[in-house]
Length: 592
Image 1: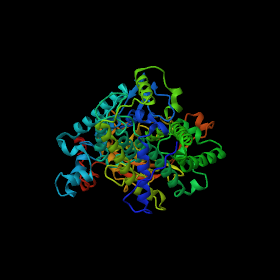
Image 2: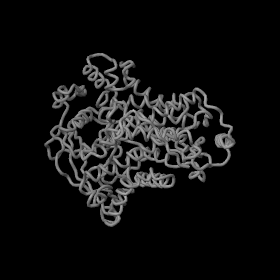
Image 3: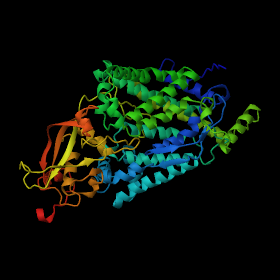
Image 4: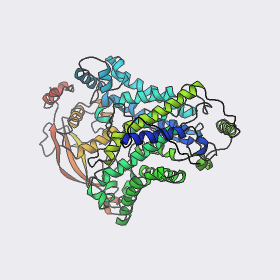
Protein backbone atom coordinates (compact mmCIF):
# COMPACT_ATOMS: atom_id res chain seq x y z
CA UNK A 1 0.00 0.00 0.00
CA UNK A 2 1.39 3.40 -0.99
CA UNK A 3 0.28 6.53 0.82
CA UNK A 4 0.67 10.00 -0.61
CA UNK A 5 0.78 12.58 2.13
CA UNK A 6 0.99 16.35 1.86
CA UNK A 7 2.49 18.01 4.91
CA UNK A 8 2.50 21.80 5.32
CA UNK A 9 5.87 23.00 6.53
CA UNK A 10 6.77 26.45 7.88
CA UNK A 11 10.19 26.33 6.21
CA UNK A 12 10.21 27.81 2.71
CA UNK A 13 10.07 25.25 -0.13
CA UNK A 14 13.36 24.93 -1.92
CA UNK A 15 15.34 25.29 1.29
CA UNK A 16 17.22 22.06 2.15
CA UNK A 17 15.58 21.96 5.58
CA UNK A 18 12.14 22.08 3.98
CA UNK A 19 12.65 18.80 2.19
CA UNK A 20 14.40 17.27 5.18
CA UNK A 21 11.64 18.14 7.64
CA UNK A 22 8.91 17.18 5.17
CA UNK A 23 10.48 13.78 4.63
CA UNK A 24 10.85 13.26 8.36
CA UNK A 25 7.25 14.16 9.07
CA UNK A 26 6.05 11.80 6.34
CA UNK A 27 8.09 9.07 7.91
CA UNK A 28 6.73 9.86 11.33
CA UNK A 29 3.13 9.75 10.11
CA UNK A 30 3.78 6.38 8.58
CA UNK A 31 5.06 5.32 11.98
CA UNK A 32 1.44 4.94 13.02
CA UNK A 33 0.72 2.53 10.14
CA UNK A 34 3.09 -0.28 10.98
CA UNK A 35 0.85 -2.96 9.53
CA UNK A 36 1.31 -1.60 6.00
CA UNK A 37 5.07 -1.08 5.87
CA UNK A 38 8.11 -3.19 6.71
CA UNK A 39 9.55 -2.57 10.16
CA UNK A 40 12.28 -4.16 12.14
CA UNK A 41 11.26 -4.86 15.69
CA UNK A 42 14.32 -7.06 16.05
CA UNK A 43 16.59 -4.05 16.25
CA UNK A 44 14.14 -2.33 18.52
CA UNK A 45 14.30 -4.93 21.21
CA UNK A 46 17.68 -6.51 20.58
CA UNK A 47 19.67 -3.31 20.14
CA UNK A 48 19.52 -2.09 23.76
CA UNK A 49 21.20 -5.29 24.83
CA UNK A 50 23.65 -5.25 21.95
CA UNK A 51 24.57 -1.67 22.74
CA UNK A 52 25.47 -2.95 26.17
CA UNK A 53 27.99 -5.20 24.52
CA UNK A 54 29.90 -2.12 23.80
CA UNK A 55 28.56 0.13 26.50
CA UNK A 56 32.01 0.51 27.45
CA UNK A 57 32.42 -2.46 25.96
CA UNK A 58 32.75 -5.85 25.13
CA UNK A 59 30.61 -8.79 25.45
CA UNK A 60 30.92 -12.39 24.55
CA UNK A 61 27.54 -14.06 24.37
CA UNK A 62 25.70 -16.89 22.71
CA UNK A 63 22.06 -15.85 22.99
CA UNK A 64 18.86 -17.69 22.25
CA UNK A 65 16.74 -14.93 20.74
CA UNK A 66 13.07 -15.03 19.93
CA UNK A 67 10.82 -13.00 17.70
CA UNK A 68 7.64 -12.89 15.71
CA UNK A 69 7.13 -14.15 12.20
CA UNK A 70 5.13 -11.38 10.57
CA UNK A 71 6.77 -9.71 7.62
CA UNK A 72 7.31 -6.05 8.19
CA UNK A 73 7.27 -6.17 11.98
CA UNK A 74 9.96 -5.65 14.51
CA UNK A 75 8.98 -7.53 17.61
CA UNK A 76 12.09 -9.56 18.30
CA UNK A 77 13.89 -10.04 21.58
CA UNK A 78 16.66 -12.01 23.11
CA UNK A 79 16.13 -14.43 25.94
CA UNK A 80 18.63 -15.00 28.66
CA UNK A 81 21.93 -15.96 27.06
CA UNK A 82 23.02 -19.45 27.96
CA UNK A 83 26.64 -18.47 28.05
CA UNK A 84 27.92 -14.96 28.31
CA UNK A 85 30.71 -12.98 29.86
CA UNK A 86 29.97 -9.40 30.58
CA UNK A 87 33.02 -7.21 30.63
CA UNK A 88 30.94 -4.07 30.25
CA UNK A 89 32.87 -1.11 31.51
CA UNK A 90 35.78 -3.45 32.19
CA UNK A 91 38.17 -1.47 30.00
CA UNK A 92 37.32 1.62 32.00
CA UNK A 93 37.63 -0.25 35.29
CA UNK A 94 40.94 -1.89 34.37
CA UNK A 95 42.68 1.05 32.68
CA UNK A 96 41.18 4.37 33.78
CA UNK A 97 43.14 4.67 37.01
CA UNK A 98 46.42 4.24 35.15
CA UNK A 99 45.47 6.65 32.37
CA UNK A 100 43.30 9.37 33.95
CA UNK A 101 43.27 8.53 37.67
CA UNK A 102 44.93 10.30 40.59
CA UNK A 103 48.37 9.04 39.55
CA UNK A 104 47.56 8.43 35.91
CA UNK A 105 49.44 9.66 32.90
CA UNK A 106 46.85 12.40 32.28
CA UNK A 107 44.85 12.87 35.50
CA UNK A 108 41.27 13.87 34.82
CA UNK A 109 41.29 16.01 37.97
CA UNK A 110 43.91 18.26 36.37
CA UNK A 111 41.88 18.38 33.18
CA UNK A 112 38.69 19.33 35.02
CA UNK A 113 40.54 22.03 36.93
CA UNK A 114 41.85 23.48 33.67
CA UNK A 115 38.33 23.51 32.24
CA UNK A 116 37.06 25.15 35.41
CA UNK A 117 39.65 27.91 35.09
CA UNK A 118 38.82 28.34 31.40
CA UNK A 119 35.11 28.92 32.07
CA UNK A 120 35.67 31.41 34.88
CA UNK A 121 36.40 29.33 37.95
CA UNK A 122 32.86 28.07 38.55
CA UNK A 123 31.17 24.73 38.01
CA UNK A 124 28.08 25.86 36.15
CA UNK A 125 26.37 25.43 32.82
CA UNK A 126 29.46 26.63 30.96
CA UNK A 127 31.58 23.90 32.51
CA UNK A 128 28.92 21.26 31.86
CA UNK A 129 28.52 22.37 28.26
CA UNK A 130 32.26 22.26 27.69
CA UNK A 131 32.78 18.92 29.45
CA UNK A 132 29.52 17.05 30.20
CA UNK A 133 30.36 14.74 33.10
CA UNK A 134 28.87 13.77 36.44
CA UNK A 135 32.39 14.00 37.88
CA UNK A 136 31.75 17.71 38.33
CA UNK A 137 29.32 16.83 41.14
CA UNK A 138 31.45 14.20 42.89
CA UNK A 139 34.11 14.55 45.58
CA UNK A 140 37.49 14.96 43.90
CA UNK A 141 39.47 13.89 46.98
CA UNK A 142 39.52 10.32 45.66
CA UNK A 143 39.12 10.47 41.91
CA UNK A 144 40.14 6.82 41.52
CA UNK A 145 37.11 5.81 43.59
CA UNK A 146 34.88 7.97 41.39
CA UNK A 147 36.20 6.38 38.22
CA UNK A 148 35.85 2.89 39.66
CA UNK A 149 32.34 3.68 40.90
CA UNK A 150 31.19 4.83 37.46
CA UNK A 151 32.65 1.71 35.84
CA UNK A 152 31.17 -0.65 38.43
CA UNK A 153 27.69 0.86 38.23
CA UNK A 154 27.88 0.59 34.45
CA UNK A 155 28.98 -3.03 34.72
CA UNK A 156 26.14 -3.88 37.11
CA UNK A 157 23.42 -2.24 34.99
CA UNK A 158 24.75 -3.77 31.78
CA UNK A 159 24.94 -7.21 33.35
CA UNK A 160 21.35 -6.90 34.50
CA UNK A 161 20.08 -6.03 31.03
CA UNK A 162 22.15 -8.71 29.34
CA UNK A 163 21.11 -11.44 31.73
CA UNK A 164 17.41 -10.59 31.99
CA UNK A 165 16.81 -9.20 28.52
CA UNK A 166 14.91 -6.29 30.06
CA UNK A 167 15.68 -2.58 29.89
CA UNK A 168 13.94 0.74 30.23
CA UNK A 169 14.76 4.33 29.45
CA UNK A 170 16.00 5.00 32.98
CA UNK A 171 18.67 2.29 32.72
CA UNK A 172 19.73 3.23 29.21
CA UNK A 173 19.94 6.94 30.03
CA UNK A 174 22.01 6.12 33.11
CA UNK A 175 24.45 4.07 31.02
CA UNK A 176 24.67 6.83 28.43
CA UNK A 177 25.40 9.46 31.09
CA UNK A 178 27.99 7.26 32.78
CA UNK A 179 29.93 6.61 29.60
CA UNK A 180 29.65 10.26 28.57
CA UNK A 181 31.19 11.16 31.92
CA UNK A 182 34.22 9.03 31.13
CA UNK A 183 34.67 9.94 27.48
CA UNK A 184 34.57 13.67 28.13
CA UNK A 185 37.40 13.53 30.68
CA UNK A 186 39.33 10.76 28.91
CA UNK A 187 41.34 13.23 26.84
CA UNK A 188 43.79 11.55 24.45
CA UNK A 189 42.94 8.06 25.66
CA UNK A 190 39.30 8.42 24.63
CA UNK A 191 39.92 10.22 21.35
CA UNK A 192 38.90 7.33 19.10
CA UNK A 193 35.97 7.63 16.71
CA UNK A 194 34.17 4.63 18.16
CA UNK A 195 33.66 6.45 21.45
CA UNK A 196 31.31 8.88 19.70
CA UNK A 197 29.73 6.04 17.75
CA UNK A 198 29.05 4.20 20.99
CA UNK A 199 27.48 7.30 22.52
CA UNK A 200 25.29 7.92 19.47
CA UNK A 201 24.21 4.28 19.33
CA UNK A 202 23.47 4.32 23.05
CA UNK A 203 21.44 7.50 22.72
CA UNK A 204 19.25 5.99 19.99
CA UNK A 205 18.82 2.79 22.00
CA UNK A 206 17.18 4.82 24.78
CA UNK A 207 14.14 5.36 22.56
CA UNK A 208 13.69 1.65 21.87
CA UNK A 209 12.75 1.09 25.51
CA UNK A 210 9.72 1.87 27.68
CA UNK A 211 10.13 4.59 30.27
CA UNK A 212 9.65 2.58 33.46
CA UNK A 213 8.47 -0.96 32.88
CA UNK A 214 10.96 -3.80 32.53
CA UNK A 215 8.60 -5.96 30.51
CA UNK A 216 10.24 -7.62 27.52
CA UNK A 217 7.07 -6.94 25.51
CA UNK A 218 5.62 -3.61 26.68
CA UNK A 219 2.11 -3.72 25.22
CA UNK A 220 1.61 0.02 25.08
CA UNK A 221 5.13 0.95 24.01
CA UNK A 222 5.86 -0.65 20.64
CA UNK A 223 9.15 0.22 18.94
CA UNK A 224 8.92 3.29 16.79
CA UNK A 225 9.64 3.25 13.07
CA UNK A 226 11.26 6.63 13.59
CA UNK A 227 13.82 5.12 15.93
CA UNK A 228 14.43 2.22 13.55
CA UNK A 229 15.16 4.67 10.75
CA UNK A 230 17.57 6.61 12.95
CA UNK A 231 19.57 3.39 13.28
CA UNK A 232 19.43 2.85 9.52
CA UNK A 233 20.54 6.45 9.00
CA UNK A 234 23.42 5.77 11.38
CA UNK A 235 24.75 2.78 9.41
CA UNK A 236 24.41 4.77 6.17
CA UNK A 237 26.49 7.63 7.60
CA UNK A 238 29.10 5.30 9.10
CA UNK A 239 29.72 3.52 5.81
CA UNK A 240 29.54 6.57 3.56
CA UNK A 241 31.87 8.46 5.87
CA UNK A 242 34.39 5.63 5.79
CA UNK A 243 34.15 5.22 2.02
CA UNK A 244 34.36 8.90 1.10
CA UNK A 245 37.32 9.60 3.38
CA UNK A 246 39.20 6.80 1.62
CA UNK A 247 38.43 7.98 -1.92
CA UNK A 248 39.41 11.54 -0.99
CA UNK A 249 42.42 10.45 1.04
CA UNK A 250 45.31 8.16 0.33
CA UNK A 251 46.13 7.56 -3.34
CA UNK A 252 46.46 3.83 -2.66
CA UNK A 253 42.68 3.60 -2.23
CA UNK A 254 42.26 4.87 -5.78
CA UNK A 255 44.96 2.70 -7.34
CA UNK A 256 43.67 -0.30 -5.32
CA UNK A 257 46.94 -1.05 -3.51
CA UNK A 258 46.04 -0.14 0.09
CA UNK A 259 45.37 -3.74 1.10
CA UNK A 260 48.94 -4.61 0.13
CA UNK A 261 49.94 -2.82 3.33
CA UNK A 262 46.94 -2.74 5.66
CA UNK A 263 47.21 -6.10 7.41
CA UNK A 264 50.85 -5.54 8.33
CA UNK A 265 50.60 -1.88 9.30
CA UNK A 266 47.21 -1.71 11.05
CA UNK A 267 47.39 -0.66 14.72
CA UNK A 268 47.20 -4.11 16.32
CA UNK A 269 47.36 -7.07 13.91
CA UNK A 270 46.05 -10.48 14.92
CA UNK A 271 47.31 -13.95 13.88
CA UNK A 272 45.10 -14.04 10.77
CA UNK A 273 46.52 -10.69 9.67
CA UNK A 274 49.86 -12.45 9.25
CA UNK A 275 48.41 -14.80 6.64
CA UNK A 276 46.04 -12.29 5.02
CA UNK A 277 49.01 -10.03 4.32
CA UNK A 278 50.51 -12.73 2.08
CA UNK A 279 47.40 -13.08 -0.09
CA UNK A 280 47.94 -12.80 -3.88
CA UNK A 281 48.03 -9.31 -5.37
CA UNK A 282 44.77 -9.87 -7.25
CA UNK A 283 43.02 -10.77 -4.00
CA UNK A 284 44.16 -7.50 -2.42
CA UNK A 285 42.77 -5.61 -5.44
CA UNK A 286 39.49 -7.48 -5.04
CA UNK A 287 39.40 -6.56 -1.33
CA UNK A 288 39.89 -2.87 -2.09
CA UNK A 289 37.22 -2.84 -4.80
CA UNK A 290 34.83 -4.71 -2.51
CA UNK A 291 35.51 -2.18 0.24
CA UNK A 292 34.56 0.70 -2.07
CA UNK A 293 31.40 -1.09 -3.22
CA UNK A 294 30.29 -1.90 0.34
CA UNK A 295 31.01 1.55 1.76
CA UNK A 296 29.98 3.77 -1.17
CA UNK A 297 27.23 1.91 -3.03
CA UNK A 298 25.56 -0.61 -0.72
CA UNK A 299 24.40 1.95 1.91
CA UNK A 300 21.95 3.40 -0.63
CA UNK A 301 20.18 0.01 -0.75
CA UNK A 302 18.63 1.11 2.54
CA UNK A 303 16.24 3.39 0.67
CA UNK A 304 15.27 0.95 -2.10
CA UNK A 305 12.62 -1.07 -0.33
CA UNK A 306 12.45 -3.91 2.15
CA UNK A 307 14.45 -6.51 0.27
CA UNK A 308 17.30 -4.23 -0.75
CA UNK A 309 17.42 -2.82 2.78
CA UNK A 310 17.92 -6.35 4.09
CA UNK A 311 20.61 -6.95 1.47
CA UNK A 312 22.41 -3.91 2.83
CA UNK A 313 22.11 -5.21 6.39
CA UNK A 314 23.42 -8.65 5.45
CA UNK A 315 26.37 -7.26 3.51
CA UNK A 316 27.31 -4.82 6.25
CA UNK A 317 27.20 -7.51 8.95
CA UNK A 318 29.29 -9.88 6.83
CA UNK A 319 31.75 -7.05 6.16
CA UNK A 320 32.09 -6.33 9.87
CA UNK A 321 32.65 -10.02 10.63
CA UNK A 322 35.49 -10.09 8.06
CA UNK A 323 37.05 -7.03 9.72
CA UNK A 324 36.69 -8.61 13.16
CA UNK A 325 38.55 -11.79 12.19
CA UNK A 326 41.31 -9.98 10.28
CA UNK A 327 42.42 -7.46 12.90
CA UNK A 328 42.06 -6.10 16.43
CA UNK A 329 40.01 -2.98 15.78
CA UNK A 330 38.72 -2.72 19.33
CA UNK A 331 34.92 -2.92 19.56
CA UNK A 332 34.35 -0.76 16.49
CA UNK A 333 33.15 -3.53 14.18
CA UNK A 334 31.10 -5.25 16.87
CA UNK A 335 29.37 -1.93 17.51
CA UNK A 336 28.75 -1.30 13.80
CA UNK A 337 26.74 -4.53 13.58
CA UNK A 338 24.10 -3.01 15.89
CA UNK A 339 22.59 -0.43 13.48
CA UNK A 340 22.86 -2.98 10.67
CA UNK A 341 20.26 -5.11 12.49
CA UNK A 342 17.71 -2.37 11.88
CA UNK A 343 17.71 -3.36 8.21
CA UNK A 344 15.84 -6.60 8.99
CA UNK A 345 12.33 -7.49 10.11
CA UNK A 346 10.91 -10.49 11.95
CA UNK A 347 9.98 -12.47 8.86
CA UNK A 348 13.51 -12.32 7.52
CA UNK A 349 15.04 -13.53 10.78
CA UNK A 350 12.38 -15.90 12.08
CA UNK A 351 14.45 -18.98 11.24
CA UNK A 352 17.04 -17.90 13.80
CA UNK A 353 14.69 -17.76 16.75
CA UNK A 354 13.44 -20.43 19.08
CA UNK A 355 9.74 -21.26 19.08
CA UNK A 356 7.80 -21.04 22.31
CA UNK A 357 8.59 -18.85 25.27
CA UNK A 358 6.71 -16.10 27.03
CA UNK A 359 7.98 -13.14 25.03
CA UNK A 360 7.19 -14.64 21.64
CA UNK A 361 3.78 -15.75 22.84
CA UNK A 362 3.02 -12.26 24.11
CA UNK A 363 4.03 -10.68 20.82
CA UNK A 364 1.87 -13.13 18.83
CA UNK A 365 -1.08 -12.20 21.00
CA UNK A 366 -0.47 -8.53 20.26
CA UNK A 367 -0.39 -9.21 16.54
CA UNK A 368 -3.55 -11.29 16.69
CA UNK A 369 -5.35 -8.51 18.54
CA UNK A 370 -4.22 -5.99 15.96
CA UNK A 371 -5.35 -8.24 13.12
CA UNK A 372 -8.77 -8.68 14.76
CA UNK A 373 -9.18 -4.94 15.25
CA UNK A 374 -9.04 -5.16 19.03
CA UNK A 375 -6.18 -2.71 19.40
CA UNK A 376 -6.72 -0.67 22.57
CA UNK A 377 -7.21 3.05 22.25
CA UNK A 378 -4.05 5.11 22.67
CA UNK A 379 -3.50 6.23 26.24
CA UNK A 380 -2.15 9.61 27.25
CA UNK A 381 1.26 8.01 27.73
CA UNK A 382 1.21 6.52 24.23
CA UNK A 383 0.35 9.89 22.74
CA UNK A 384 3.18 11.52 24.65
CA UNK A 385 5.49 8.81 23.38
CA UNK A 386 4.49 9.60 19.80
CA UNK A 387 5.40 13.23 20.40
CA UNK A 388 8.75 12.07 21.76
CA UNK A 389 9.30 9.93 18.66
CA UNK A 390 8.50 12.86 16.37
CA UNK A 391 10.83 15.08 18.40
CA UNK A 392 13.59 12.48 18.09
CA UNK A 393 13.22 12.39 14.31
CA UNK A 394 13.30 16.17 14.02
CA UNK A 395 16.31 16.40 16.35
CA UNK A 396 18.30 13.80 14.41
CA UNK A 397 17.34 15.46 11.14
CA UNK A 398 18.40 18.90 12.32
CA UNK A 399 21.70 17.67 13.81
CA UNK A 400 22.38 15.73 10.60
CA UNK A 401 22.61 18.89 8.50
CA UNK A 402 26.27 19.72 9.31
CA UNK A 403 27.10 16.01 9.12
CA UNK A 404 25.67 15.73 5.60
CA UNK A 405 27.41 18.95 4.58
CA UNK A 406 30.64 17.43 5.83
CA UNK A 407 30.04 14.24 3.82
CA UNK A 408 29.63 16.15 0.56
CA UNK A 409 32.49 18.54 1.29
CA UNK A 410 35.83 18.08 -0.43
CA UNK A 411 37.36 18.96 2.96
CA UNK A 412 35.60 16.14 4.77
CA UNK A 413 36.73 15.48 8.33
CA UNK A 414 36.14 12.17 10.06
CA UNK A 415 35.29 11.18 13.63
CA UNK A 416 34.09 14.65 14.59
CA UNK A 417 31.18 15.79 16.73
CA UNK A 418 29.27 18.99 16.05
CA UNK A 419 27.39 19.00 19.35
CA UNK A 420 28.75 18.50 22.89
CA UNK A 421 26.51 15.50 23.55
CA UNK A 422 27.74 13.64 20.43
CA UNK A 423 24.22 12.75 19.34
CA UNK A 424 24.97 12.85 15.58
CA UNK A 425 28.59 12.54 14.46
CA UNK A 426 30.83 12.13 11.45
CA UNK A 427 32.68 8.87 10.99
CA UNK A 428 35.49 7.41 8.94
CA UNK A 429 38.48 5.10 9.17
CA UNK A 430 41.84 4.59 7.48
CA UNK A 431 41.68 7.61 5.21
CA UNK A 432 45.41 7.11 4.84
CA UNK A 433 47.40 3.90 5.08
CA UNK A 434 50.92 3.68 6.46
CA UNK A 435 53.15 1.83 4.02
CA UNK A 436 55.58 0.52 6.61
CA UNK A 437 55.25 -0.42 10.24
CA UNK A 438 57.41 1.32 12.82
CA UNK A 439 57.45 0.65 16.54
CA UNK A 440 58.79 2.44 19.58
CA UNK A 441 60.54 -0.01 21.90
CA UNK A 442 61.25 1.04 25.49
CA UNK A 443 64.56 -0.27 26.82
CA UNK A 444 66.19 0.09 30.23
CA UNK A 445 69.63 -0.58 31.65
CA UNK A 446 71.22 -0.84 35.09
CA UNK A 447 74.53 0.41 33.75
CA UNK A 448 75.42 3.83 35.22
CA UNK A 449 76.81 4.95 31.85
CA UNK A 450 74.27 4.77 28.96
CA UNK A 451 77.10 5.28 26.43
CA UNK A 452 79.02 2.25 27.63
CA UNK A 453 79.15 -0.21 24.69
CA UNK A 454 78.96 -3.02 27.26
CA UNK A 455 75.67 -1.73 28.67
CA UNK A 456 72.89 -4.34 28.56
CA UNK A 457 69.61 -2.84 27.39
CA UNK A 458 66.53 -4.88 28.28
CA UNK A 459 63.18 -4.43 26.56
CA UNK A 460 59.73 -3.77 27.98
CA UNK A 461 56.82 -5.54 26.31
CA UNK A 462 53.35 -4.08 25.87
CA UNK A 463 50.17 -6.08 26.20
CA UNK A 464 49.44 -6.49 22.52
CA UNK A 465 51.43 -4.24 20.21
CA UNK A 466 54.38 -5.83 18.37
CA UNK A 467 57.65 -5.94 20.29
CA UNK A 468 59.24 -9.33 20.80
CA UNK A 469 59.65 -10.71 17.29
CA UNK A 470 58.95 -14.25 18.56
CA UNK A 471 55.62 -13.35 20.12
CA UNK A 472 52.51 -14.34 18.18
CA UNK A 473 50.21 -11.41 17.32
CA UNK A 474 47.47 -11.23 19.91
CA UNK A 475 43.74 -11.81 19.50
CA UNK A 476 41.82 -9.44 21.76
CA UNK A 477 38.87 -7.97 19.83
CA UNK A 478 36.52 -6.62 21.07
CA UNK A 479 38.77 -5.72 24.00
CA UNK A 480 40.88 -2.58 23.74
CA UNK A 481 44.30 -1.70 25.14
CA UNK A 482 44.26 2.07 24.87
CA UNK A 483 47.98 2.61 25.48
CA UNK A 484 48.95 0.08 22.81
CA UNK A 485 46.85 1.94 20.23
CA UNK A 486 48.35 5.29 21.13
CA UNK A 487 51.85 3.83 20.83
CA UNK A 488 51.00 2.99 17.20
CA UNK A 489 50.32 6.68 16.55
CA UNK A 490 53.41 7.75 18.46
CA UNK A 491 55.61 5.55 16.27
CA UNK A 492 55.08 7.73 13.19
CA UNK A 493 55.36 10.96 15.13
CA UNK A 494 58.20 12.31 17.28
CA UNK A 495 58.43 12.26 21.04
CA UNK A 496 58.09 16.05 20.97
CA UNK A 497 54.64 15.52 19.45
CA UNK A 498 53.81 12.78 21.95
CA UNK A 499 55.26 14.07 25.22
CA UNK A 500 53.38 11.45 27.21
CA UNK A 501 55.95 8.96 25.92
CA UNK A 502 58.59 10.70 28.05
CA UNK A 503 56.16 10.66 30.96
CA UNK A 504 56.01 6.87 30.62
CA UNK A 505 59.81 6.69 30.51
CA UNK A 506 60.03 8.61 33.78
CA UNK A 507 57.56 6.26 35.43
CA UNK A 508 59.52 3.24 34.22
CA UNK A 509 62.67 4.68 35.79
CA UNK A 510 61.01 4.38 39.18
CA UNK A 511 59.35 0.99 38.54
CA UNK A 512 56.01 2.78 38.91
CA UNK A 513 53.39 0.08 39.46
CA UNK A 514 50.60 2.22 37.95
CA UNK A 515 52.20 2.40 34.50
CA UNK A 516 53.75 -1.07 34.68
CA UNK A 517 50.28 -2.55 35.11
CA UNK A 518 49.58 -1.44 31.54
CA UNK A 519 52.51 -3.47 30.24
CA UNK A 520 52.93 -7.19 29.73
CA UNK A 521 56.58 -7.58 30.73
CA UNK A 522 58.84 -5.58 33.03
CA UNK A 523 62.44 -6.81 32.67
CA UNK A 524 63.28 -5.27 36.05
CA UNK A 525 60.54 -7.03 38.00
CA UNK A 526 61.87 -7.86 41.46
CA UNK A 527 65.10 -5.96 40.76
CA UNK A 528 66.38 -2.44 41.13
CA UNK A 529 64.74 0.07 38.79
CA UNK A 530 66.69 0.88 35.61
CA UNK A 531 69.14 3.75 35.80
CA UNK A 532 68.44 4.80 32.24
CA UNK A 533 65.52 4.32 29.84
CA UNK A 534 65.56 5.01 26.13
CA UNK A 535 63.22 4.67 23.17
CA UNK A 536 64.43 2.83 20.09
CA UNK A 537 62.75 3.14 16.72
CA UNK A 538 62.40 -0.04 14.64
CA UNK A 539 60.87 -0.96 11.31
CA UNK A 540 58.80 -4.16 11.54
CA UNK A 541 57.75 -6.59 8.81
CA UNK A 542 55.95 -9.92 8.94
CA UNK A 543 58.34 -12.81 8.45
CA UNK A 544 57.53 -14.67 5.19
CA UNK A 545 55.60 -17.88 5.91
CA UNK A 546 57.77 -20.91 5.26
CA UNK A 547 61.00 -18.92 5.48
CA UNK A 548 63.95 -19.75 7.68
CA UNK A 549 62.90 -16.92 10.03
CA UNK A 550 59.42 -18.35 10.37
CA UNK A 551 60.88 -21.78 11.01
CA UNK A 552 62.79 -20.25 13.92
CA UNK A 553 59.52 -19.05 15.39
CA UNK A 554 59.83 -15.42 14.32
CA UNK A 555 56.54 -13.74 13.51
CA UNK A 556 58.29 -10.45 12.81
CA UNK A 557 61.49 -9.20 11.27
CA UNK A 558 62.78 -5.85 12.42
CA UNK A 559 65.50 -3.37 11.58
CA UNK A 560 66.65 -0.48 13.74
CA UNK A 561 65.91 2.97 12.34
CA UNK A 562 67.57 4.95 15.12
CA UNK A 563 66.85 6.52 18.48
CA UNK A 564 63.27 7.64 19.13
CA UNK A 565 64.33 9.50 22.25
CA UNK A 566 67.76 9.51 23.88
CA UNK A 567 68.60 7.78 27.16
CA UNK A 568 67.02 9.63 30.10
CA UNK A 569 67.37 9.31 33.88
CA UNK A 570 65.23 10.59 36.72
CA UNK A 571 67.47 13.50 37.64
CA UNK A 572 67.70 14.64 34.04
CA UNK A 573 63.92 14.57 33.71
CA UNK A 574 63.28 16.73 36.77
CA UNK A 575 63.05 20.00 34.86
CA UNK A 576 61.09 18.40 32.02
CA UNK A 577 58.48 17.10 34.45
CA UNK A 578 58.28 20.35 36.42
CA UNK A 579 57.73 22.43 33.28
CA UNK A 580 54.67 20.29 32.50
CA UNK A 581 53.36 20.08 36.09
CA UNK A 582 53.91 16.32 36.16
CA UNK A 583 54.73 14.83 39.57
CA UNK A 584 58.38 13.84 39.52
CA UNK A 585 58.91 10.14 40.29
CA UNK A 586 60.70 9.30 43.51
CA UNK A 587 64.46 8.90 43.16
CA UNK A 588 65.72 5.87 45.14
CA UNK A 589 67.95 6.91 48.07
CA UNK A 590 70.96 5.03 46.72
CA UNK A 591 70.79 7.10 43.52
CA UNK A 592 70.65 10.55 45.10
